[in-house]
Amino acid sequence: MEQSVPTRNKLGDKLADFLPKLVLSPSLAIVLIFVYGFIFFTFYLSFTDSRILPSFGLVGFENYDKLFRLRAWSIAVDNLFIFGGLYIVICCALGLMLAILLDQKIRSEGFIRTIYLYPMALSFIVTGTAWKWFLDPGIGLEAVVQSWGWTSFEFNWIKDRNMAIYTIVIAAVWQTSGFVMAMFLAGLRGIDNEVLKAAQIDGASNWALYRRIVIPQLRPAFMSAFVVLAHMAIKSYDLVIALTNGGPGRATELPATFMYSYTFTRNQMGIGAASATLMLMTIAAIIVPYLWSELREKK
Amino acid sequence: MALASTDTVIRTGRTSRFIIYTVLIVFCIYYLLPLYVMLVNSLKPLDEIRGGGMLSLPQEWTLAPWGSAWSTAQIGVEATGLRPYFLNSLLMVVPAVAISTMLGALNGYVLTKWRFRGDTIIFGLMLFGCFIPFQMVLIPMARMLGLMGLAGTVPGLIFVHLVYGIGFSTLYFRNYYAQFPDELVRAAMIDGAGFFRIFQRIMLPSSGPIAVVCIIWQFTNIWNDFLFGASFADFDSQPMTVALNNLVSSSTGVKEYNVHFAGAIMAALPTLLVYVVAGRFFVRGLMAGSVKG
Image (tube, rainbow over all chains, first blue to last red; front, side):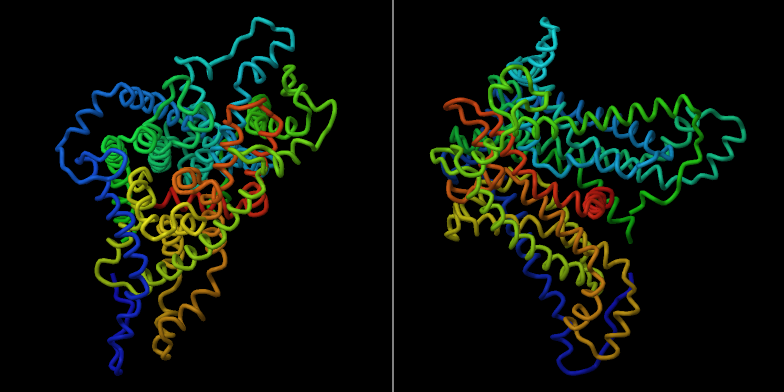
C-alpha cells in the first residue's frame, strides 16, 4: 500500500502529520469504549452473581450452567434454529426466483422492484402490527375467508403454540425477501454473457443454463445473503415483540427476547449477560470470517 | 448501482413470458397486501373490521381513527395519541443522523487519504461494531447513561444512536473515498493545502451522493429502532416505535384495530416517504452495507 502523505520538511509538520489521527481518535475512542469495553463488561458480568444490578462477585460458569438447564433458553434456541433456518432458506429461494424472473427483460421492472423492496424501509414494529391483526383468527384472514362462505376455514397459527413460530417466519420473509432479491439481481447483472451465448449455441436449455452456469456464479451473492440473514435472525427482537410478544406462552421466545426479559424483568442479570455473550459469539463466528475475507480482498 | 449493467441473453417464449408476468404480479399483490390492509382498515369504523371485512374497502369512509391515533389514543397511562412520540423520534433522529454522518465523512477521509499503519485494523474494529447483537451492550449502556445523567432522555437516545451509527457511516464514506483519485489530494498537498482545507475544498464537494446514501440509511435505521428506545427511554422520551407497540399491545379496553393501523402508517410514513422519493439511494445503501463488508 502506498503512503499518501508525501515527505515534507517544514516546521510544525509533525503536528500536521498527527492531525489525521487526532481527527479519527474520538470515533476510535467511542468504538473502543462503547463497543469493545461494553462487550468486555457484559462478558465479565456473565461470570458474576449479578441479579437486579451489576455485581462483581465471581461465580465461574454457574450462569452458563443454569442457562443450559433453563427450559426457556432451550426453547429460545430451538426456535432460533427453526426460525433462522426457514427464514434463510425461504428468503434465498424466493429472492433467487424473483431475481431470475425479473431479469427476463421485464417491462416496468423498476416499478416492480420498488414494490418488492419497500417493506425493507418499514420498522419491524409496523410489520409486526400489520401481520399480527392480519393473522388474527378473530378479525384477519380466517374471519375474512369464513365471511366469504368457507365457514370451516381455519388459520389460527398465531394462537397455536406449535405453529406460532412460523408466523414470525411469514412476517420476516415478507420484510426481507425483496432485499435478497435485489442482492441476487445485482449478482445476475454482473454475469458475463459470452459463456451463456456459447452454451446457447451448443443447444443448452434455459433450465440447464441457469443450473449449470448462472446459479453457480452467484456464490458471492449467496454468501452475502446468508451472512446478512443469519445475523438478522439472531438479532431478531422487535418483530417477535410486536407480533406475538414471545407467546402464546413461550412458544415464540428467541434468544434476543430471552436476554431482555431475564435481564430487565426477571432480574437475572448474570444469566442475561451469559445469553448475550452466546449471541455475540454466534454472530462473530459468522461475521468475522466474512469481514476478514472482504477486507483482505480490498488490499 | 450495478442493477442496470447487462441484460440477460436468456430468451423466453410466449407462454413462459405469460407465466413469468403472472408470478411477478402475484408477488406484487403479496408485498402490497399488508400495506393495503393497514390503509383501508385505518379508514373504516371498527365494526366493519370485526365483521370479517378486513380485506374489503370501507363502506363508510372515516378519518376518525387517524385523529384518534394522532392526538387522543391511550398510550400507556395517558391519552395523548402518538403526536408527542412522533416529535420525540424527530428530535432524536435529526441530530443523531447529522453528527454520525459528519464523523463518518471525516473518518472515511482519514482512512483512505491519510493512511497509516494499522488503519485497516481500526476500520475492521469499527465495522464489526455494526454487526454485534446490541443485547451485548444494553446493561453497561444503561449504567453509563445513568452516570452521564442522560438516562431516560432524548439526548441519551441521540447519544446511543450516534455511538452505534459511526461504524456504518464510516463504512460508506471509506468505500466511496477509496474510489476518489489520490492524485488530486496529493496535488493539493503539494500546493500547500492542509488536512481540513483538502477535505473542505476537494472531498466534500464531491460527496453528495454518498452523503445522501448515508443519511437515508441512518435515518431509516434510527427511526425504526425499537430495542434502544424500549431499553433507555422514559415514558416522556419514548420514540414512535415504542409508543406504537404500547398502543397496539395494550391489553386494557376495546382493541381499536383501525386506530392501530392508522398509528402503524404514521410510524411508517417518514421512512416510506424517503424510500419513495430517494429509493435509488436507499437500495445503494442497503447493498453497500451488506454486499461489501
